[in-house]
Length: 259
Image (cartoon, rainbow, N blue to C red; front, top):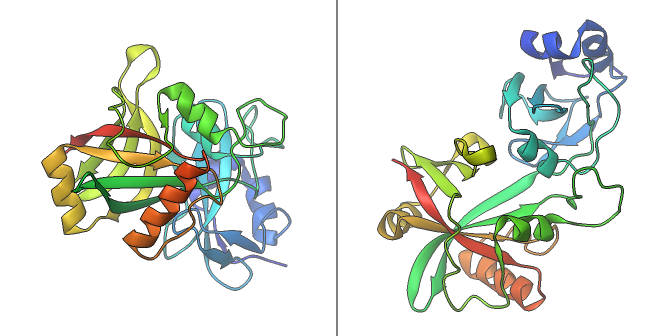
């Protein structure tokens, strides 16, 4: 069945006319999908859907988004960011580029204030939507926390004190909005985005004020299914405490970057 897909000229140029036509005909496009921007379900058979092509140094991943969330476009990302966000890669597209459709893991990021030793700290909680496998590994499992620990994040068993600062990493705020989590570049180069918002995320005035006060943001990360989407900060804190007690939480303090 034909899909209500938007395939921009730049996406078509990358994947080729033949692949683009197959997508529009519904041969390679999923009917239902999780929007790569808002992470809620979509249906390309009944609503306008954008094709979004993420391109790293060696890998390309085709994702789908509600047309109202994102236009069809090509997004350049680091290979590390792309590999870290993808659970399963298969098939080929555009020469030696690899394509993953539609199975992928997206990093969900939630902002909130965390009370530690009587003081409120701005925090970001990162939880993938699916298990993260070490790049190149054929094992079935979840290497999300081990990969972060190798980067310097600390395993946490309770949230009673501020975790150590992880130098070289930072949280990018610009014009009062959250844009990215940055990690050190290769060989001491410029920082690159470990996670980047497809659209800048709004944060509350109190969160922004706490970030400006401390000049750092606490980042906590947990495997898929450990935190969930919590509608209130007290519920988020309870989920963090439970994940820590179960040995499923890492964290670090990241300096604030931006304006």
